[in-house]
Length: 118
Ligand code: HEM
Image (cartoon, rainbow, N blue to C red):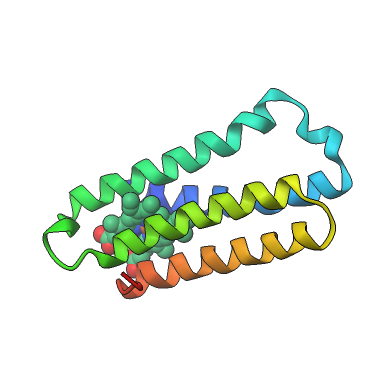
């Protein structure tokens, strides 16, 4: 159940991020409503909370937990690069966008293999 929520918010997070980048580039006015500004924070908070819930549910801190710390560090990088991508223009925007997606893909590989760099 909690894992299903985690998976759902992973999709919402990356889907929302890609949608926002497209909108900020081509239809910035569509990002003005309050819901468009608040939704990403709500989604990423639930993603983080569901991850923390899974850590306790699976008692993952009892064993080798470097991969969880890796996920947390990379989540911060993903969110930070997302902010840079939204606020920048041109090559800086698209560079940060690609790097954010690379972080996201790496988080998934760490989640599946349970091996990180920490
Ligand atoms: C962008 C952020 C994240 C992505 C893309 C992501 C992705 C995933 C994926 C794909 C799985 C399933 C792995 C599998 O079944 O083989 C998973 C599981 C898990 N995630 Fe995340 N995750 C993210 C954030 C987090 C955070 C921040 C935490 C902890 C604070 C976390 C903790 C966990 C735990 C403990 C599991 C294992 C659940 C289990 O196998 O019982 N995740 N994550």
